[in-house]
Image (cartoon, rainbow over all chains, first blue to last red; front, top):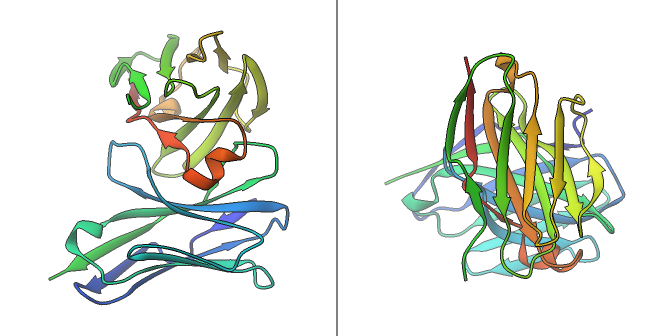
Amino acid sequence: DQQVKQNSPSLSVQEGRISILNCDYTNSMFDYFLWYKKYPAEGPTFLISISSIKDKNEDGRFTVFLNKSAKHLSLHIVPSQPGDSAVYFCAATTYNTDKLIFGTGTRLQVFP
Amino acid sequence: KAGVTQTPRYLIKTRGQQVTLSCSPISGHRSVSWYQQTPGQGLQFLFEYFSETQRNKGNFPGRFSGRQFSNSRSEMNVSTLELGDSALYLCASSPPTGVGKNYGYTFGSGTRLTVV
C-alpha cells in the first residue's frame, strides 16, 4: 500500500521557469511533510517541510503548498536553475515518530 | 559540525554471507533511522532507534536487524544475503522527535551494497 505517491516520474522545465512537483498521500494521520532532493549514490538533501496545520511554507526559491482536503502537496521552484536537476522525493511522517514514508520520486530536468 | 557518517561506502558480498553497516549520527542527535533504496522499491523504511531502543520497524524480513549504542551510533546487520538485498542503505539522524520535522532529517551518503 503506497501511502505517499508521486505520479509523475519525470518533469522537464526550461531554466527560469517554474517547476511544480506534486505529491499525494492517503494517510490523514501524517502531521509533517518534507521534500528532499537526491543525486545518485548520495543521501537525500532536505529542502523544505510543512506542518499539517499550515497550507504554505516558503524558503527562498522553494515553496510548498498543502491541501489537506485533497491530501495533496506540491513543491514550487521559482526560478528553476540547471543545478536543480535531480530526483525529488516527498516524504511524510506521523506524530511522535521519526519514520519517513517516501514517495517514489520525480526526476526533474532543467534545461537552458 | 560533522554530518552523518556511514561506513563503508561500498561493499561487495556473496550470497549467503552476512554484512554489518555502521552509521554515526550528528553529535547530539539521538534518533537514527535506516532506509533501503532500490530502483524497483524506492526508499523504504527499515528501522528507527532512539536512546538505544527500536521504536519502529519496517516491513522487512527478520534477516534485517539493527541496534543503537549508548553513544547513539547505530549498526544494521543483514544475514544470509540475497541478490535482492543489493541496494543503497541510508541512515538519517535527527535531534529529539519533533525538531527534526522542522529542520529536516540529515542523511548520510549511504553504503552501496552489492550482493553477487
